[in-house]
Image 1: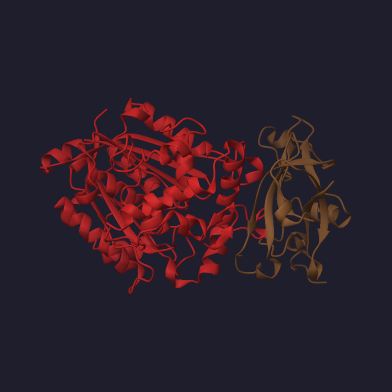
Image 2: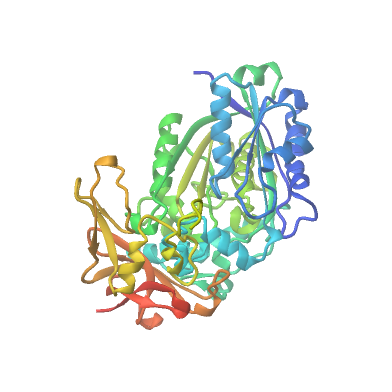
Length: 384
Length: 146
């Protein structure tokens, strides 16, 4: 089978209140990716636009966004899988190219969360779970993830301090990321004394809502060569899985089955093992989410996540650097744009263009992007 | 009588919880059972599958399904929980409260902690699901001490 390359990446700054409309926000990532790829619009065969609904008023946002970016009359497809919408978009783009239907496809993710209040966004995120059987009890995302934190800490005897260490790491690198929302250093004591949100998670265990956009352009191997792409990054492995929405139907509260399964598929497709991964971006919407990812992806055995962070093995110079761009905890989490931002970080790492956060000579990088409370799991393995 | 009048909808599910986001479902009888003090699930007599939350349809048996209600009985073990300090829109008056999953053995329930002081809640404790009336004619179920 021929290969599919990522030939251009871009993202906007992730901010708390973007001073523009959704089409203008999306344009920022589009423009950067087009410059990065050195393409013109006639070389884009189709777009996949990715976001989660109900944060802004536009229905069917793909139409206005491709109009604004001058991408008519090419077809556009809209996809959503909550917080992993844009890695779902990548999988669709890969399939469109691999099938021969299109030679190049743009994946454009965006979210403008600042048009509604924080309580309203919690209500909407809560409705990303089971509205019939869970939402009437008063659910919200931090509380759902907190239930996994409670389950994990109870099962393995890990501590809230272990979770806080993940935030300290995120802030170490968030300070270096000019496009992150949160760029201040964070001390361990500050995490542990932060206001409780949903026990055992506290304010510093949670990422911030943000406005942002991301863009990833993929192309067939033939086109990447024909267009003289200097440093194509190849899509080596793709895994996707789903899990029951209602927590009453989950087997475990100390792991995400959809992430484990997506990881298994991605490693199998790439023909590699977790030990081969040189740098990873994992979905740290909450500190517990990164802890679960260490184990679901096989970077640590079950219950071994705390030891990994205590030994700083997931720092830039550790055995498996994770979220050295600051992660969602620092960057903020503009739902539909998040996966594309993670992909961009890994592409820059594999090209050797990651600047202050560059890890040494990586061959394989991994993106782990989750939708909802482990409802949807996407794992992408990229290689040089 | 008008011949084209819409049939009256059974919207009992609008009573479920502090704020319900669903009015009509094929398992609206769940609300009727709750009002009689029973927390009920369903099972498919054809294949033996047990459903909580209850379902009126069975993906294994399709049109051969025979669905019947059963009452949730006895206690379960608390699998996990979280105490909320903030609430989503519409739930502020309920604070503080804890959402939880209770493991009954063959199936689990997602719900709220009832009469246990929140600082005494522990994973693994035995709790009993009971119907619970709320202000404004709403109703849900909570997990109480045995």
